[in-house]
Amino acid sequence: MKAWRFYGFGDMRLDDLPVPEIRPGHVLAQILCVQPSVTEAQLAFGIPTLAFERIKRRLETEAPIQLFGHEFCARVVAVGEGVTRFSEEDRVAARAKLPCENCPLCLSGKGQLCRKGPIIGFQLPGCFCEYAMLPEIALTHVDDRISDSEAACLQSLSDSVASVETAELHIGDSVAIFGQGSMGLECMQIVRASGAGRIITVDVRPEACAMSRELGADHVINARDTDPVEAIRDLTGGNGADVVFECAGGSPKQGLAGVQTLMHAIDSVRSGGKIIGVSWFGAPLQFDIDTLRERSLRYLFPDISTLEHLEHTVRLVATGRVRLKPTITHVLEGIDQVPKAFEITANKSQYKAINPAQVVLCR
Image (cartoon, rainbow, N blue to C red; front, side, top):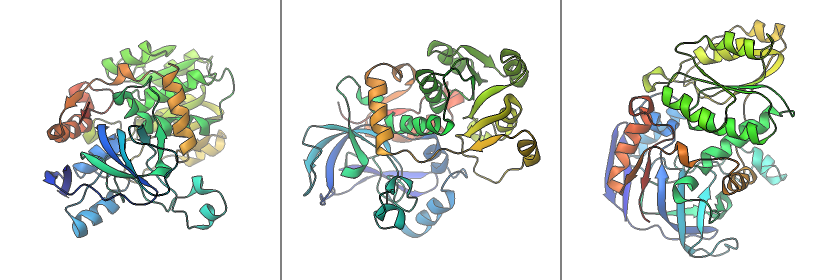
């Protein structure tokens, strides 16, 4: 089979490899559609973010290796011994982070909290390839109403579901969301489906603001020409939003907001309110923690998404409560286009992309 392998940061090559031999508890699947996450796109070019040091060590000691590719849709072509939930021809999507099945949390029935297990595309081979061997415990069925392209977004959507669950929304809560890339738009639609009252979104890209308005935001603020903190306070009677999602922070080299949107989030939330930290910053940061203490603010981080979250995303998309198709702006054809997908995803603002760029490997 053809598979992309990394020889170093910024050095990926299309190699010929044997099709993986199927193992018990796994399925062999043909990859239909795959996309790099924003985090993977940054790591591919050596931009520090989540797991940077681990990826750097792997490249230094194990290269060439199959890295990245945990956001995908695939078709099962064979099932291993002990697999009971899937059959040949089933379409599947996956959660990325798996339980280790050996730690005290896993052995006590709390495997959804485990942080010691492998991640598809990081410790396990990813799916920028024609065929992949995937553990059954990672997979969910894809509803027939969901396209291959939409299914490739389900893993990211499951992380957004976990982010919204962390907020513990109350019916009618006012919500502000900084960043209207793929996860910001997902969070916006999920809070809308979860009973939020006034939904306010913020971005600096006209195409992202337009998409946010199309998908259901009540108020859309372009921070290039409007002070978002002042606007959010005006829209909430001077109080600030009950819950603020920060989905825009990260490396300015990739068109992200650095730490500015976190500062804005702190200033935009009401006293006693909650800030949900969705972004990865890639480096330590400084902010005035006494402000959080004085105003009784909660700065919360989402738990890892579970198989139950992933299964819920299937229902959300299949029933139209969350719309993914409008956000999929760049779709490439053929495995040879994978490097271009990384380039577009790492520079979404330059290419006016909303969702990561996708590659269709098979129809």
